[in-house]
Length: 434
Ligand SMILES: Cc1cc2nc3c(=O)[nH]c(=O)nc-3n(C[C@H](O)[C@H](O)[C@H](O)COP(=O)(O)OP(=O)(O)OC[C@H]3O[C@@H](n4cnc5c(N)ncnc54)[C@H](O)[C@@H]3O)c2cc1C
Image 1 (cartoon, rainbow, N blue to C red):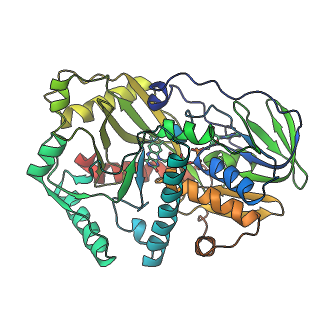
Image 2 (image 1 turned 90 degrees about the horizontal axis):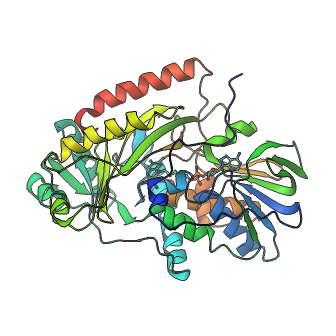
Image 3 (image 1 turned 90 degrees about the vertical axis):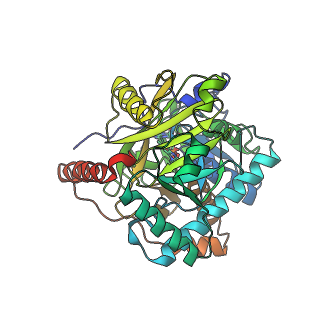
């Protein structure tokens, strides 16, 4: 059987995290090894579950374990778009029923609202911005057709999405690469590693966070015994929120695949170079195809994210060359197309875009399978998972429980063959949107 890594070990640091001051990881072992609840994985999902558990049960003692350090997992490696439509660039990804798309948007919106509240309450300095233009931009006629179709669908849902013609795109973004765009349903842009850190460093008393602690095995029933590189811990209930890496614990093994995607930051740019990136001091641009290229002008730099690889991280030099080419295509006049930071990030993809969410057996809860839009969507799912475990009903939880779980995927080598063929096909379809 193929060995599944217990946790991701990336080749380079998250560029977002590298731009922040040094942070001391929480590694001090707790006095007790027995907890009422243990959460495996301190990404957005695990952080939300931990916070909500102690909100609901004030004397709850929660241990939150993470194999890495805060800011270095996918939660600190993403592009920081808080999109309420997880299917964007499509209005409704993969043609699910309209109910599915509308329910997803309600779930994401709830996560976003909670994050906004937490950012304000704890004064989390994460460049949370709601007024920065975020545009879904098309470079090809096929892309334009798809973005126009998305806009029509949004209109049918009474959601307005302002249009951008090529001249406006050129003015705002500084590039004539794109021919048509709409205002994306991005409701905020953030520095993701700063948000991740801010949430982790402002957890309520009652939650013990332990970083660099990787869970490698879990016993069958309550009380659960969790083996880690720092010894064994015991809990009455366990929450699995380590996304794709749940597979290494034998959970949802046959329903998720891992796709790496890649980001890079230019060095700090001077004013002349920043002028080449359009007149808006900050902006975000999302692609018209899901295999396309995302960009942000932020913190006096350009962020570019693109590329997809199945289960294996590409070498940093390969990534650097690929992203430099995409950058040059869009901004040929820049003095250089060098990057200061280049990194990969791993996401979980399910065939039907669904999460595995709920109680797997008495005392064992999981929310995994989060691909895109995971900052807000993971947050909602973590929160609802805690509510489910505590028997705290809400209309949002009922809506969430109406959604299907992920479809079964064929075993290897068929899975790899199918996934790599689909990636190659979609990359071809994406064409110049990449
Ligand atoms: C390059 C990139 C760009 C993206 N852009 C966006 C975007 O703009 N907006 C958006 O909303 N989403 C984006 N995403 C997706 C988003 O980052 C994820 O959906 C989100 O991080 C999922 O959160 P999570 O908490 O469920 O999982 P994760 O963030 O993956 O957190 C899981 C945690 O579990 C830990 N872990 C794993 N195994 C173990 C173990 N055995 N023991 C203990 N701990 C373990 C990991 O270290 C990790 O910290 C992007 C992702 C990438 C990679």
